[in-house]
Image (cartoon, rainbow, N blue to C red):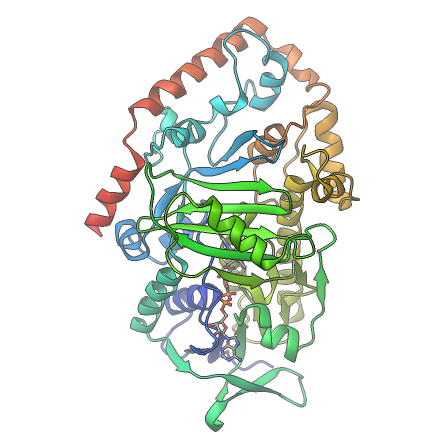
Length: 500
Ligand code: FAD
C-alpha cells in the first residue's frame, strides 16, 4: 500500500486510548487525517494505574500541558520514588528513588566508592546519598534545579494521579483538537481479503467504522492484535506468578508522602498511592495461594484511612504479545503487554509506544522495516522492564515463606542471571541501550534487598581514600541539610492545584 494514512482509529478509551488520542491530536492531525476513538462505556476501563515514573513529565510537556492545570485536574501528587517494605526481609524497608545518586569519582560510579568505604565513620547507608530519598522520607519536595551545581539538580520526580480523571482530562483535550469519539461495543472485526489488514469495525446497532491504521487500546481483551490478528501471547507467569489484584480507595491521611509504597506479604504485595483527594490501595496476589475474600479482608485491614467505596477485584496474566505491531494494527497498553505495577512502568510503556510509533509513522504505507524496528525496540524495552520487576521477587530475603522461597530459587531469564552475576562479584551494573532504569536504580534495588557484592571495582583503589571519604561525608551532610529546608510536599501540591 502506498496511499497516505488518512484514517487513524483508536479502539478503547482507557489510559492508553486517550493518551494516544491526545498525542495524535497534537502530532498527527494535519487537517487531512481523521482521528477516531471507539469505546464502550458499558465495558468500561480497568480504572487503576495511578503511579508513574519521571518520563511522564516529558510526555505532558510534548502535549503542552501546564503542570498546575494537570495537578488540579487529576488530583495529582508528586512522586520521588517507591518505598519497598519487607522485600529484603520482613520488617526491612528501602527506597528506590528517582534522580541522581551521589556523584561519580573520576568517572567511577558512586556506589563503588560506597562499597569500599561503607564501614568508615560517618558514611552511613547508601540511601542517604540520594536527595530524592532523603527529601521523600521527610515528606518534603521541590522541583529539580536547572543549575547543575545545586544539589537540587539531582532531584527527579513523577506523579501519582487519579487514572479516571487523567483519561477524562486527556479526552477533553483530544476532543477539543478534533478527535471524534464513537460510543459503542465492537462486535466483529472485518479484514481486507488481499492484505489481511483490519479494514472495518462492526459496532452494535449495525454501525461500521473503517480505517487505515488501527491502534488497539482495548485492554486485556486485545480485540485487534490478539483476537483479530492472532498474535500469540508470551506468558511470564512462571517468573511473576501474581495474577490478581483487589483495589480500594481510602481517605487521605497526613503527611502527604511523595512516595509510592510497595509492601510485601506472604503471597504478593500491596500498594499505597497518596493522591490529593484520597489514597489508592491495592493488594496484588497469587490466586492459588490466597482467595479473593482473604485478599480483600487483608487489604481492608491494612488501610490507614477509612475505605471509600467497594473493593474491586481484577484478574491479569503477565506477559506480552510476540509482536506489538502486526499489519496495520499497533497495540498500546494492556492490549499488548502486562507487567504488574511494582515499578509503575505500564503507563510509561504506553508513552514509549506512542513516541516510537510517531518516530516510525507509516505515513505512506506499512513498510516491513518500520514494523520490524518498532517490534524490536518495544520487545527489548518490555523485556528489560520484566527483568527489573523479576529482580524484586528473586532477590528476596523472606526465608521460610513458600511463595518467596520458590521465587528466590527459580531459574531466571539469562539476561537477568548475567546482570546478577556481574553485580554479585564486584558490584558491576552495566547500562544497556534498551534499559529504562539507570545504574542507580538497579543498585538501589539490589543493595536495598540485601544483595551485597563480594568485592568492588578495583578502579576505586586508584582513588585517594581520604579524599573520597571526606567528599562522601560532605555530600551526606549536604543532602540532609538541603532536604530539611525544602517545603512540605503537601503545601507544594496545594499551591499548584490552587493555581491550576
Ligand atoms: P483499559 O483501561 O482496560 O481500557 C480498555 C478500553 O477498551 C475501554 O475503554 C473499553 O471500553 C474498550 N473496549 C474493550 N473492548 C471493547 C469493545 N468490544 N468495544 C468497544 N470498546 C471496547 N500502570 C502504571 O503505570 N502505574 C500503576 O500504578 C498501575 N497500577 C495498576 C494496577 C493494576 C491492578 C492493574 C491491572 C494495572 C495497573 N497499571 C498501572 C496498568 C494501567 O492500569 C494500564 O496500563 C492503563 O490503565 C492502560 O489500560 P488500557 O487503556 O490499556 O486498558
